[in-house]
Image 1: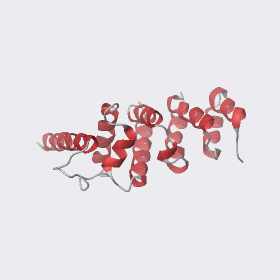
Image 2: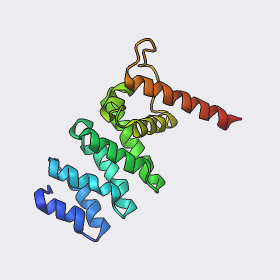
Image 3: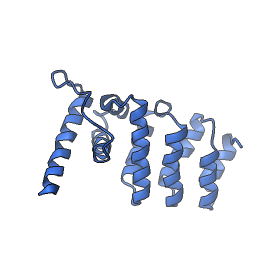
Length: 168
């Protein structure tokens, strides 16, 4: 079943049953800009079940490059700050999938988030990936740091500091 156009937007935005909104998320394909916008609005759905499922759908069906920088940042901000632990974990899983799409390069992933304009969410994203052992510092050239690498080094130092404090 493939849903298109206005029918999809109506089902995603106005159906009172969270199960209907979740099923619409599950069967969406292919994505155009209207559907992506409606899809991403589900990151603020009242239903935890729908929000949790959104991050899995994005991870499995929507490549990182198909989203604008603002859409990526907004999706991460909503997911990483969600009140539900399962939503936050699915957001981190999606972030890990995005990292794989970037050939496991922290600098490349952070460049997709725009570290200069979106420093807070880029730093939080890197920190969460470090916490979940999905990120390392193998691609950092300390003698020629880009904005992305400098942010990562700062976050990595904060991560190590927090880890040390927790051990004592």
